[in-house]
Image (cartoon, rainbow, N blue to C red):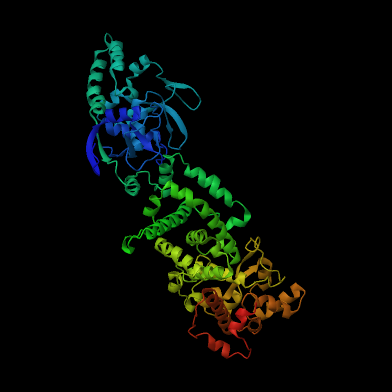
Length: 616
């Protein structure tokens, strides 16, 4: 075969299965195991027996620059060390099914329709094949390994355990279809003096069924050996009939394995195992692809730095990135160089998030933002540990959260974040593009109603950061127990009270009127007016109203307005306090539209929203 991009031709099924047997055709390691149940194999055999098309096979010529670890097709036992000529990208299930059922000569280990393991042989009823009224699939049977069919009580119904019994039943073993001569000779000798009609049955059966296997041609698309790794991955996913996408991690696992490096083991035993400690539980959901993206960011950044050092022109510098194409170009030496740094980067990311009062994956605003965060901390190293650097990092983080910038396609933003934030930390560049792009509209607070959004989770992290206490006990939220089963997010002005008072659901169901409360505190609140439940809280706490009011202020809430049952004024004060806190974390001025401030001006209680936000 030439080194052209691809070629298309037809090859005899007999020859393809011989290549499988000899190990000249093997599977790349990223191909998943053989899973077809025996009814699927029956349908495949029926199609081949009638000369019907069963789809193309796609192969990659071996020996190119992109090397993959390989393995024989299941059941094949080529000599140890046999190097393949081609790797099967598409058609594994069909080739394996045909190889095991008609070439291997041993019982087929497969599954039934319930995915239970079964072992047996494929046979075809010769007379049923010749019956025009019988569907071809119904003519093919899957018999147990001992060829004895029994009922559920273990009673023998049919016994085909010897050649003579096969001849008597006119059951032809599919394992002989590519080399039928011994079976045919035995069949003819069995019937020669007894039943000439059976001999005529064989001749018609041979022409109508057996010869179709001998003549069968399989369309093969063959990719040249110089096909790029990215193209192999894309082609595989386009043609893969299994319905499960091939991940970058799987492809790189197969690629690195060709150099005797077990990527999967390194991920499980070296990377994830180092995060098992409780203090790292915030990063427990980081995936192998997330990790590879962070590694790729560092690798591509290093390539760019090397190119700059060599004096490469600006327009020819390699890009920093972690898109699929970038990850597939990651070399083993780059992975081995940067993976340990990224492991430390994720650990430092966990510590940073704890400092931002983000403790649990359920309340992590953006899991995706961990990817550039870990890369930034890995590349910046000790430069990122000073108080000034941590402040800058926090601004970038909260701008990403409240600007809601990491919810869609984020790889391009990652590629900007790494050089932007590291340069900003080191004082070699200005504010990152993520900070410049971040905006938070005051009206967004009215649409944050469930914890599905990043900004919603961000608000509650800021409440923890502000020192939110339990209203009844005054206990501060603990890292290990705050968001447990007894604490949830509840209305401050109860929903029942708001409904009765005719308040706007868009306001009373928004985050402005919600805060984390223990189950016991929420039971005391019930559906009562705040003026009522504040008294009950003080009584339950065995304390004074002034002390309880102090606990409530830690949630950026004005208890004076709650005591007046003045929802509009309360809402305006809380909204302003939350906006002041968000503004502080983002380092950006957020100007409210003023729609709620009138409510505060009409109240005879002196409440300054910014002072409330800074009170704790």
